[in-house]
Length: 161
Image 1 (cartoon, rainbow, N blue to C red):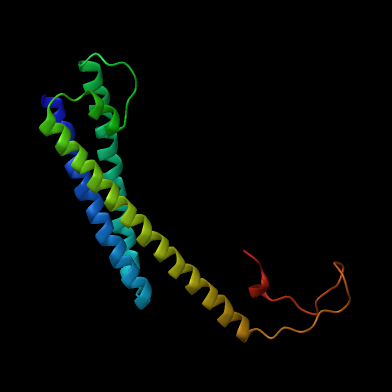
Image 2 (image 1 turned 45 degrees about the vertical axis):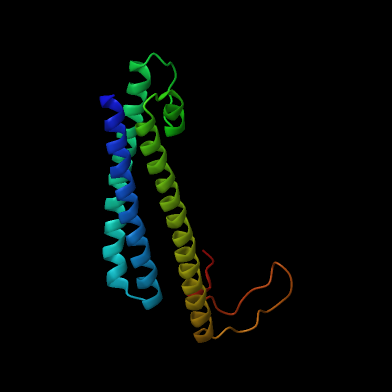
């Protein structure tokens, strides 16, 4: 029973770490909208810190689940919470673990939605910058036709990435 409590404790900590990451993602969206580059640098550091913490907790969770399955005579390398829920006899622990897993899924989905929104904001900013640069570059028409045509000059800003 002790290892189940450890798994629940790690899952609770994992949920809290994901909530911190969600808060940071919300701050990132605000910084992107405001164009605050210094805040974005700070946020990037915090995102890295959160992801490192989540990665460590995830490894601990996997280790504890495999350990629990071995202690209870179940073979396999079960690393999902659903696998352990099938073997739990304690209904209270089963309910707690299932609730935490459900909350964690919800937070992860919310992080995914915000990250997609942030990605679109970044893409829009890049498009605007490219458009703005294009407005300042004077392009002369190409001489010739087809793939062998030559330009009169080449701009450093004409390179495709």
